[in-house]
Image (cartoon, rainbow, N blue to C red; front, side):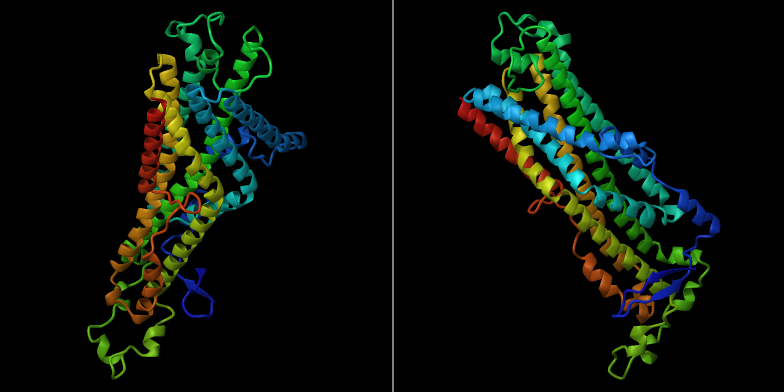
Length: 459
């Protein structure tokens, strides 16, 4: 036996319900079931300096506490150097758009990093909630849905890593490997400053020393490669954790719909006779008053009605998922709003560069960067759309139950859940933006309008 809180009425009290068809062995199996992708994500957060393992030594914990400060200092220096470079080369459209694109990328990464550090406790509480209240208590028959969610998250993560590696490789290694693609010499004798910073460096930055000579150039180039790699790695770590939480939220609504669709089957697994709780054909003749309105006893119903208790548990799970959505929206709100402002600008700058007459090195560099930006926002909108669709499906599943055959103790709770299920649950990327495919399309249209305006202005 286990207990849940009854949600009907003003009084909240503990009531006993059947163990939902799970014997002691299945309960023990559920307690050890977990998704492996969480281990991967926390390993990435550890290497990014955003997570301190409990088994770390005192010295390691001190270093982990210092590392985020060093990382933020490094990001601030990088962003500041890029802003100074834009001021210096103001009027040069090629350099400005290149610098603007990479600067917006650094700003997005910095916002993600700061937001995660500020809300880390909340995020970890959300992860713990998902593990203990959702995954660990999941019926074994629905685990395949969680496995499918995990495979989807792994696939999208691998694809993101591949795109990130391609972006860094095309920006840093192609200019060295494919020397013939550039019309200039490696010793920079015939190169202008514009050519050096756009073709031979990863980021356009203000460099307060002469970097044309060796080893200054190699040191500058190595710093920029490491800087870009660290920022991409940190952004990937934070995005992966939020992506997992979004995918599990969508899976939670989907499984809730399955619980409602398979209510009779699940209750039958508890060895309860379904026929004992179906209303007789002449129910209205003996359970209503003379006006045909169900009396108070019929509305209150049998406290031991398993269908009513089953629905109460579904209502509790539905409300828990909605509250989880509110917390997730609070986590991504500010950083998400800044992303929605910066990403169109970044896409505009890189898209403009792609449309210009570039050599193969520059074309690959800007194209992979553009695809990486579009993919980052696409993944968020993908899971946001999934949450939206699955939350709307709960209403259909609820109405599809055999509510008309059951007692009024069950029927009286239908409006409670149905009224809330009619409003779709939406993930928000900021105050005014929602994460779904319509928002993604709007961002692409905005970026394209900016690109067309830049090309017209340049002509």
